[in-house]
Image (cartoon, rainbow, N blue to C red; front, side, top):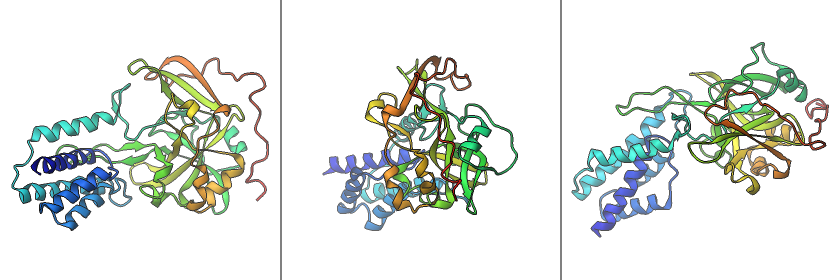
Length: 351
């Protein structure tokens, strides 16, 4: 019995260590561990339920950046403290918690550049030229701004297409929702950009921004992924054979840290492209643009699918991933007859 109790505590210690860096998805192991501690009298039911609720508490909050992130591990740590006291067990050594925290922190690093990129998937893409984008989406330029970089990285400006009072506009925002993590002493750290949102989390963590008022289209001509062995990864660019500009489903919001910001929605990748990454951008067909911008969330489930692999063109390069973010595409070409110009009529122009 004592062995099972110690195992339950270890499962919850690992959840706490992970919660120091990110939201934790409650797993059956967490629930079983808490149920066991309730059964042996170490916790009350309300404490176990509070632990589960805290695990999924959002990081981002418009009125108090980082506040809920601070609350999450604090609640979980308090519950564990109560369990140790209830059992009469000594608290775990600081070294154990520090080792677990380092392990989860390391998992959040981009190993190629050594910088933290929480929840990163696709983290660089080419939007294309502004006037081409404007015409492609038949959009009105919302405000006069600089063009922005040719290759967009998180926390850099990029183009988004959104609806404003029934009008389709082309706007510029910062790529990535700012997330405020906490240091070892509880101090707020410099915000990090969360530039991808998983489709299967739109009704959960992302729900406050998943409604029509916060949806957008992200114009893109290509996106990049690292390929090869860790430590020597090369840059591969992916685009569509059927069009030179495509729409990536996105969400946007106003932030206190960086002003208007946006993030791209991701889904599972096509099996044929699984060796590149297990996830890919949610790409929308032209006839689906209006649906993404205006339909209820329940009507969008059909977009939680990969784009057909036979329409995806993969261009490997010899450029290392860590150096490839600023390089222009060289020798970019599609096989003859496989790339077709997009239709000249936008689905928005008939409104």
